[in-house]
Length: 313
Image 1 (cartoon, rainbow, N blue to C red):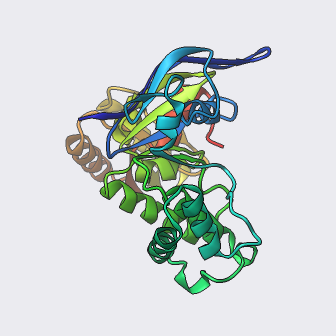
Image 2: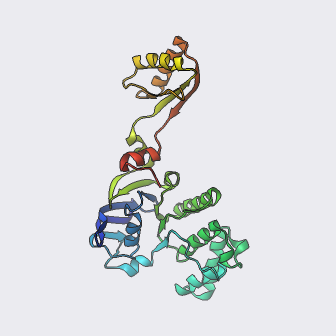
Image 3: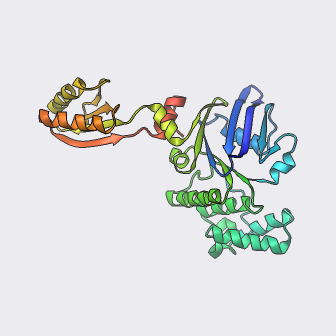
């Protein structure tokens, strides 16, 4: 596949803080890369360098085939950027915001109005098109902000924590809009602290910490890096916990963990369905009263905590 974004050894320092310390990235055309990391890890700095808002101190980066340092104007013609806060003019209507951007991009007034109408319809804002943007809800403002990024039909879209502060319904609406853009061939680099957002949208995920990429892969690959699935068994009564542990330890490659207060035993599954069937049969033969029996797969939260030593957010 063609590569829409490529970064090699990006570095950036602010006085005594090394914001980027050799960032390497490659994003295939028409895909979504989720950039995850703790606060201060270098996510926003990476976006600002790739979108030509900051010059790197070292390294090399290309976006849409153009060098971000030597050919910034060519890069800007081909990208859209939505920051952490909606950058729309509250005094202008939704239609006026989009039309103004089109005019500034030299689309011509008629074409700019047509483009504004198309985007207002696409993002479900036609009914509010002639209201001042200051009257919009947070979700509506974010959709208008995303629409503004698309006036020039960019090849590459940078979204820096685009759903921060939105309610779940507004967040899902924005996710759907991003998926539609990717289906149309747009490449997206998304920074987020919502791990379910990255899990839902991203084809690949890069985890950044202390200014460098410490892990990269598909969401499933990162989850599997934490370890195999686990079987969680909740039994009834303290004596049942002891009995269940005695049965399960006999056939387990790794000693099960236990929460005696909740009566929950967690068993590593090395043999998939075979391990589940063996545990169920052993407990039934021993007469252990099982209240709940569930498979728990590692989550991106687990992977994030394992890789960074911190929880998301």
